Image (tube, rainbow, N blue to C red; front, side, top):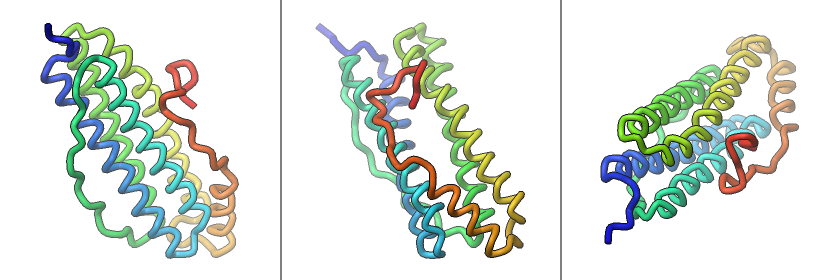
Length: 184
């Protein structure tokens, strides 16, 4: 008896998203290392926390595939892109990455609707809500940097921005504990 409740196409797109989340973790980690090397410990800490959050998202998807009787596959990931040259470029990469990830989540939602796979559709709603928050956070980073003066920001403004990000909570919630109503 077949126990996998996911279509082959759905399992493949979920595995692809797992890989995308793993790549995102590496991208955030690489950006964090760059920021740390530039002396922006608070920004680095912020990016390191997001790297862990992306790994949690990967694990959440992996667990869902297993719960539905599927078999997740761990795939190779691409190396992160080269270092940014400015904080503006760093924060723009964060935003672009989140928008790309949102589009990938929408592909899962669309396939779930097409296949009338309501369990996966419901599961994906957590990620839809999460991506709204992630895009907003990325836009806030860009806005804060603009207010500080962008690439021409004073050392004092950059210090204040770095300190504000450093002051954010360090705990990264575990994805398995999150719900659609409480994604944190």
